[in-house]
Amino acid sequence: MFNSILNSIRRSTAPALAAALLAAAPAVPAQNGLGDIVYTVGTTVTDPAGRNWAFIIWQATTPSLLSGQSFAVYSKAGDVTSTAPFVRRSIATLQTDARSIEPLLRRAENIGEDSFKLGDDMMQLFANLMPTNTISRADQLSAVIRGSLVDASHYQNLILLARNHPGVALCLGLADAQMISAGKTTFEIRNFDAVLNQDVAVVARVTVDTANPTVLPRPGTPVLMPETSARGDINLKFRWGTPDNLRRLGLMQFGYNLWRVTKSYAVSQGWHVTPPTPTALTNAWAATANVAVRVVDVLPNKNLVIEGTRDTAFAGEAQTMVLRGIVRQDDISGNNTVFSYNVSDATIKIVARGNLTDTQKKGWFTRVWDKVNPM
Image (cartoon, rainbow, N blue to C red; front, side):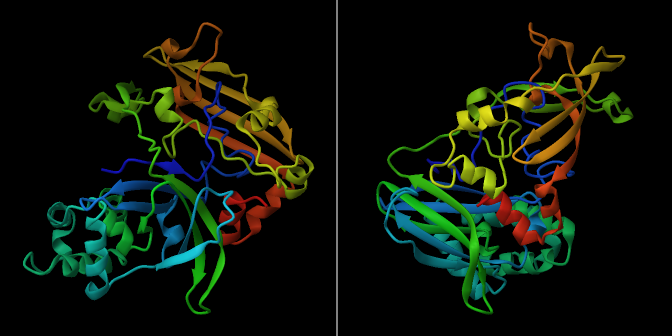
């Protein structure tokens, strides 16, 4: 089983209302949600022969953001501070030929891929895309990939399949599996120009450690989510509870903060030499840690509709934020505060003025690069 998960993007738990919803506020002015961002996770596994493997996967908030891209995978012994040079291990790109897919599926078996379960899952999701169940597993996956590239709904299911089957992720060019030595290994993912046969830029970096695995804790008790539409009369919506220890490690959870500042501000703080600690970032952004809201409506089920605005300034960027959402009265603490992950149907609108706003005019890769590495 996979026994180590490390995230290449810094995370922290939001202390109060809307802090987590502000996770992308300094990074993505005048946008909803997180916008275009690439995130990377890595894990280690020991195969039956006792060999250590690393599995690295990179995803995007919008799957199409990575479609058609190629990536060079580099690694070095040690953590990011190691003086060892990065060495290219592979080129990851979309594969549609069964002759190329077959060795990737065999490689995935070293990290736990179940080829029989993969075949069953493909048949359930993509039966209309596969000519027959008697063809090889590689031929089946080849047919599924080629059929999904021209159908958005099939492609979405293919991405879901890749999250459960590492072999599929390898064939989509969104993951890599490599044998590694015991201890720490740092991987670097670089956007690769296949035509020019050269790296473009680093888009992700992650360190895995075979000696100190990080295991995701179990989720909490399911929580009933309020549904105020007519659909809520016949359907109940639940979500898994996310205790603090899970939220601190869980990728894409409400509660991790993505920070982006101007280069001049980072240099003035010395962050280009020594990365800032979570405390330093929290102190720098303390002015926006909380948002005062007011109750604008009380729903028939006694839930409260809240709304609040705040003007902030950070690292040369001025912003006006408008927050609106629904909270249960039971989720309001004794000091009249509610955590952002308890705000349902939350919407946040940010109007920004400053240098960072200008970056919204950049191309997709430049915008992604700015968010992964602000320097």
